[in-house]
Length: 406
Image 1 (cartoon, rainbow, N blue to C red):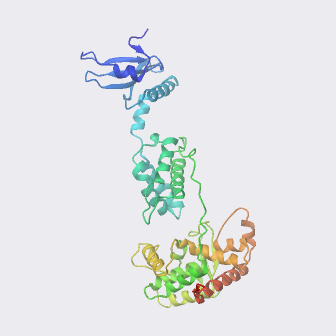
Image 2: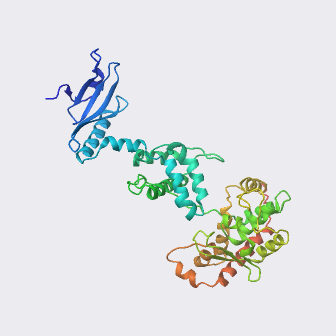
Image 3: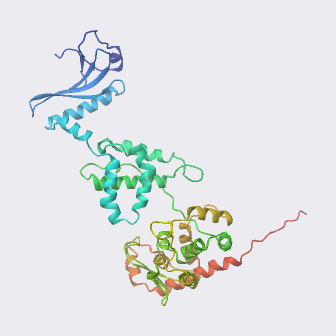
């Protein structure tokens, strides 16, 4: 019988004290083989794993953690896991050293950014921004072996308690889901030999945004753009965004070489298309007029050039957009909603979902074959009808109804 073998309980362990000698005292758990409690002459109590390594013919001792910081049940579980590894022939001491020296998530992410994201993703800068905002501070310093589904689940939930960077309220579940998806991708591509701790974490339910500018809002939008306080470049950028229904990054990166003034077409290269395919966008008359006016005043390769940015073209005008919304008395409107506005007005004029999908560059397995056969003429006609309807809102005037009391 092992000396000092007892059934570990909080009551018993709290009562255990050192005998005053200069030696360490050891007590062994009757409930879990290989688990012991060490008490130093100073009175510190720590759990240890002690077992015989048959494969190497030696005794193995490994610290588990101090009591009561480490609960008894947790210490038992860790000891059971270690014992299983030892019985399999694993050198748990060397394995622990490898874990101690392993890369952190921050190192793994940096490597992923260079190997996978930058060479293959056009939106890698968005991944970097998302990592910096929601992942780096709470998780960046953690080694890969630290992660578990429960820890990821808590982090995912905690994101929704963070305050928004702009405005009021907290971060949405949709944003938390995007961060979770990014983290899962990093684990899948950079640590494929390990179980992905993100796989069993349930995402928050998301609600699709269906915001677009109503006729009265379009009137205020156009009026706001026409005011002298609105910079001409911002005005043209936003008008082309709504006239083409293109993604904001594509409009910002638009080059003159991709504009066909004869055919009234804009060719978005595959390298800039979200679907990695060339996209042809019909250009309606108001869009062509804006482009001709800008072309006569510039020698840049970009339609919206900027000497202030490293890219050479304008970046997302967040402050200018916010100021415009204030002048136009509009709220809860994003630049991306201009793209949705084009699709919505196409639908109002009777365009089919296939035509709208072709306009906006949507791609789905069921629609791919149809898109391949679709002529651009109905797409152009639909866009022209939608723009005509939107332009008609410029003439709207809000009516004031006076109600007289009888």
